[in-house]
Length: 446
Image (cartoon, rainbow, N blue to C red; front, side, top):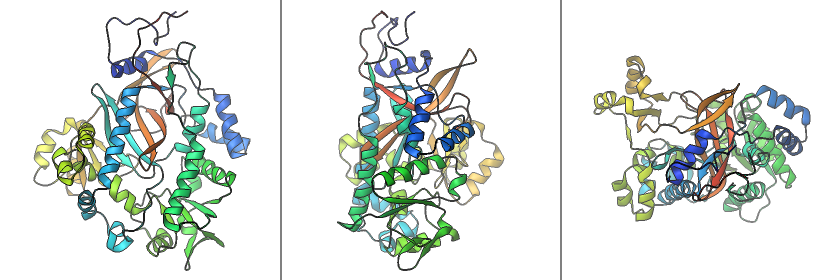
């Protein structure tokens, strides 16, 4: 029996189309569940915790890998680097900071802080014309979970082994270097002693196991780390968690402006320059505010900002995005089936609407809610076939590049069903990415 990766094709096919064909036709399982549990137990140091975590989150990890062509992977990198280049341009910064909250502006937060923001997340859908950037996130979750997942995944058969490869790199070394660099950019040669991993009610978060993995990673490298709710922090000239002085906060909050009362101590410490906060409100304003997509999808505006032609060309793949305004509301309603509507400061797919499912009542809320929405050209997610109970079930997936300062740390996929990624789909969850080089002449299986 031929594996799809080596089965002869009826006609020549592009790399992107071949990747789509593999994702549709290959049903092989690639996850070694035992190896994953062992790896997680080794890193966390608590086998009982890992077993309970996996039992409580049966759809956190998918058993299949996702195939991406080397050309599409390179195109995603090029888009990411183009966004990073745009964010360094003075005119672009001026434009996006004009609609940013005060805490992100130079006159409030200062313009001299050089941190780049840990774990940027660039999310893509693959299309027939290549990868399309859907959005950018500043506190992208899942990286610490995807690293052991990739290590515990195997080539699904001998025909695949050797032809497909994951992006190279030592993830843990890259993570430690990233946090140390964030620290040194603000504190120079001072010693980084303690990191706080901060989120609201962290133990109740679905990705809480990732916080534990992060804490243990830091500790293995001689950096003390604590996981805490922001209400446990206090500012008294320095930032403290209990009696422990905090040097750097790994920020997992979705209150991007630090406006909530429970975040007052962290906000005060950040504004006083008493703690290194990464990612910060400024990083969110420069990269992840959905309004920025209206600029990133406009070649004319990007060229006017002074972005290099090669970067402008890379960003031509960003789906056209525009603000929802009273002036264009009627036209957008008429075109809604081709659009996706997102709140400008949204996160985790909350209050996101697919235009074809939109009701008049929800539309009125979008138009009058006051928080602001963007309308983005809809790009259908690609499909990954999964064999469940003997039945071929096509699920959706997106691709995420976890990056730091323009360099990829890790690539991963999220397999799901429904409107958005949800970790509730049987057969879905995080999946490793297998990158293949240019299509070769198919060979028969031995």
